[in-house]
Image 1: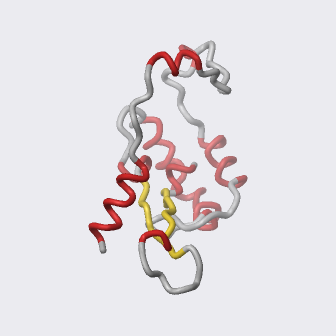
Image 2: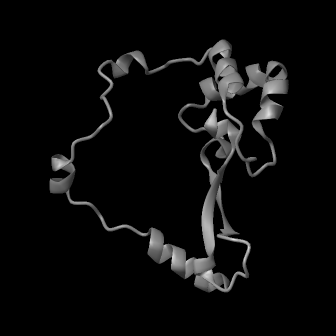
Amino acid sequence: MLIEVYSFYCNLLSVDKVSEKSIKKYKFLIRPINKIDDKIGYRFPFAEAEEVVMKMDSSSLGPNGLNIGFYRKYFKYFGLFFIDILNDHQEALPKTFIESKIKLIPKNEKETKGVNDLRPISLTYLEYRI
């Protein structure tokens, strides 16, 4: 069954290369950053990260089992270390800052007979979300 699931999602999630011509025609909805030089070397202050943590909505647990409630309660104790990691490793962040785990869950509570009865969800670490 594992080979069937792997094959199904490889085919489903694979993409064809987009031509340069179609990219040039596409109108992006994202505003460009005009002063990118101002962002290079930006160091995240503790207060900014703490504000983000306190304003985050509750969401599913990360793969490590931590939720936003944990971060809200204990960020004052480990937040400075967290900020140091962000500021000192912007070129190559730790694996948990950039990885996610894809889990397959049943679409409904009925019997799961095959791949079509499952849906993938992506679990990201809260470090990434912050």
